[in-house]
Amino acid sequence: MKTTRNLIIILLMAVPFLGSAFTGNPGLSGVSGTSGLSADSTAKDSVHMGTVIDEVIWVVGDEAILKSDVETFRMQAAMEGQKWNGDPDCMIPEQIAVQKLFKHQAQIDSIEVTDADVASEVEQYINYWLEMVDGSRERLEEYRHKPLSQIRSDLREDLKDRQMVQRMKRKLVEDIAVTPADVRRYYQDLPEDSLPFVPTEVEVEIVQMTPKIPVEELNRVKDELREYTDRVNRGDASFSTLARLYSEDPGTARRGGELGLSGRGMLDPAFATVAFNLTDPKKVSKIVESEFGFHIIQLIEKRGDKVNVRHILRKPVVSDEAVESTQARLDSIADDIRAGKFSFEDAASMLSDDKDTRNNKGLMSNSDPQTGRITSRFKMQDLPPEVAKVIDTMQVGQVSHAFQLINQRGKTVCVIAKLKSRIEGHKASISEDFQTLKDVVLEHRQNDRVHQWVVDKIKSVYTRLNSDYLDCKFEYEGWIK
Image 1 (cartoon, one colour):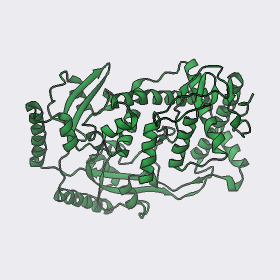
Image 2 (cartoon, rainbow, N blue to C red):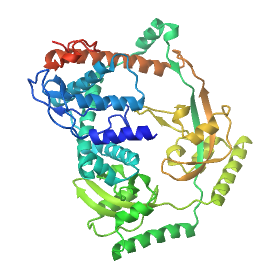
Image 3 (cartoon, helix red, strand yellow):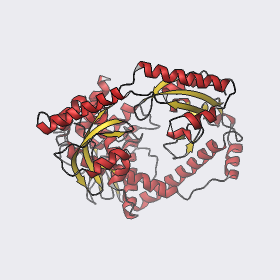
Image 4 (cartoon, rainbow, N blue to C red):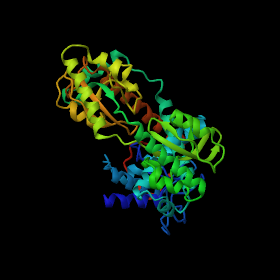
């Protein structure tokens, strides 16, 4: 862990962003060049790490790829355990060059990405970096040699470029369709040992209840927040200091409670209503209850349709007695379901307080981050760990005992679960896994389209390579002219 952290700190010093910390695809950190740069041109410029002499190794159009870009990419890939099908010394600069081709075409096609599109991703990166330097804003600013506001601004531009590339790729393949006949033909022509393996998938229904918190505990939390407000108003402490000391939002506490510029849709509705109505940065809001707990908020700035605020979050403590009482009630409901008094689905519709599943008769839904498709099937590793642990040993149709978990909003809840279906891991078949096979065929066709587009694009773009790369075996032909 220490070695990984040291590598990340080096990257913080050297590059605009960690290109794959959240997306799985390493990003770019190249600088603009000028058309006509020759293969032996050098940039006698120092990078953030100190006095290292950098070197232009590739030129694509009017963009230069630096030696430091390649080394940064290499470190990122090493941290992720990425494997290469060829020589990484050749494949890494080629991958960076390909990204530049997509970005160039995205600009030609006027593909737009707004700040709102990247705001959430920016904060994910900032939070990740802060975690790697023990939550210290000062240490992060020291490593990057710039204030956090500038780090955030630079990161926003880099992530904006990457989203342009992603949208350009989607545009290239948006008209590709796959018919049932295409899937059947693919399946028939595929050798038995080449069929994709489909891991075990399950469908799960839940009934959720939130342990009741007594009024005394709610008042205790509110009194704490009122005390923080009084201390800020008296000048005894700054809001940011109190947020670092007492806020129970780990993602923002180490930044003094600062959320960063956020659109209304990115925030809890109750929180957003108060945050966007603040006008005086010196004042502290009233207490706000959200799905995450109770907050007080202080305005930092408003910019267009976005707001940047600090907040302090406090969560009421759920007592063991409340958890036990709620679990006992759920166990009683489970007994009635097993006795046939009513169905699990009726219990979920009538008694569950989980708004995400109640209207779907308790059935949990899974959103595929790659395709955006929503399905009721989960691979075991995609379930909440507490649910997966219980479901793993159950039979189809069985109802679990009551157990507790921390939901996505950070709240303690109690649940009973029913295993609706289980499809054991197997080689894909046309009857049971049509959608899986359809996705495979679609991916092949999309990859073929993108590959041919890159080959054609290379033919029309000026490229020059350092002599060290002339003997490389590249994925795409045409780089050496």
